[in-house]
Image 1 (cartoon, rainbow, N blue to C red):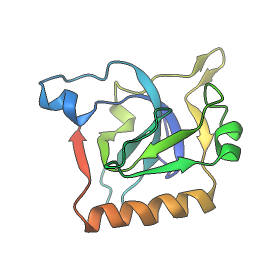
Image 2 (tube, rainbow, N blue to C red; image 1 turned 60 degrees about the horizontal axis):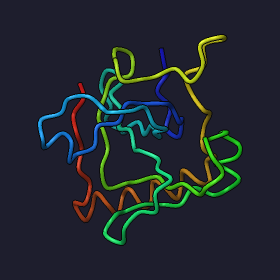
Image 3 (spheres, one colour; image 1 turned 135 degrees about the vertical axis):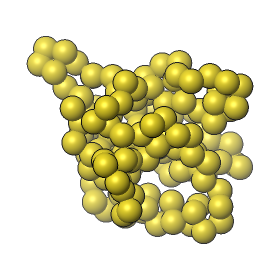
Length: 141
């Protein structure tokens, strides 16, 4: 089980909003996703934001992950990556079927945690997205 903690990065079968709109119910592949525990979280509900190595288009709300953070979490590849903040998945990790272990021997379920300083930047940008109503959530509960 994954203990929800804001800033924790896990491997997760993220379901993009465009896939959800087409009737898909499962993410196509696991990808790193950053957990944010909302202040009003009930029963361990969280929001997960995807990380991507593709350069976001100008209409996307994203923050580039600093190289030091990417290396410390040992994320795949050596290209830059971004956390997208204009769409997320809501889920309850204690009962989720969408979490994918990173390793099985021993069992590892997270890449680690982003620093508090970086998460402060992420949460400020996320607050802007909420105020501007630019956040689209796909409910996975």
